[in-house]
Image 1: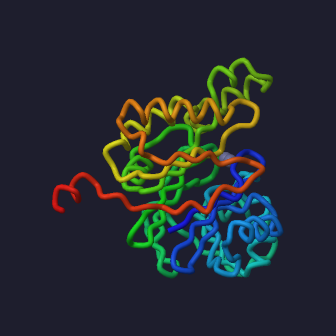
Image 2: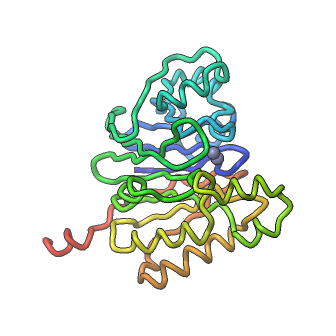
Length: 269
Ligand SMILES: [Zn+2]
Ligand SMILES: [Zn+2]
């Protein structure tokens, strides 16, 4: 399984998950031209895209959705709440499929499990995507890590997790107070510290790859986010985890997701 983060952050998001020639795009917050160009330069074929899965209706996740769906003739998968919220913002699209958090579905060889996240919009979800061998879980745009999010992160070989902001930079920064309060709220975004704490819980699981995602360009730096993650992974004895940092302007990957034996599998072997 391969994962490419074409763009990540408050100016646009798009992630490709591909396995055995089937690919899905998670969010389309960048143009179709940029999706095609970034996939081409990553050695991925835009024609292999079978669907676009939408996490929520904020414009950094859907600004290119209509054009991308039409250009690549992709059905749009989203919760009913998200579909309602994007009505009138995406134009006429090939197909719209309503999904529910907690209900798995198949796209080619991929099994997709949407899970609810806590964010200030209609009905947001993250996605866990498996090809039967490896699993990637994508959780960005969430104020807290709830039980169902955690369950999916714990089962993932590749975790794409939001490291949005450094709390000190956010508090001392130039954002107006209501926006700061929104970002720090339970329906806002994960700080470096909160996201890193979550890694401790994943230390005993199969996670072999970690992607730090949706970093704020105003209130974070790649160095601070990476240091938060490295500190916790070191303490947990998991310096073996391959850590990548997604960015707003430059595509990351494709990353080959390795399946590592879990402790129980090792015991059986
Ligand atoms: Zn976002
Ligand atoms: Zn959002």
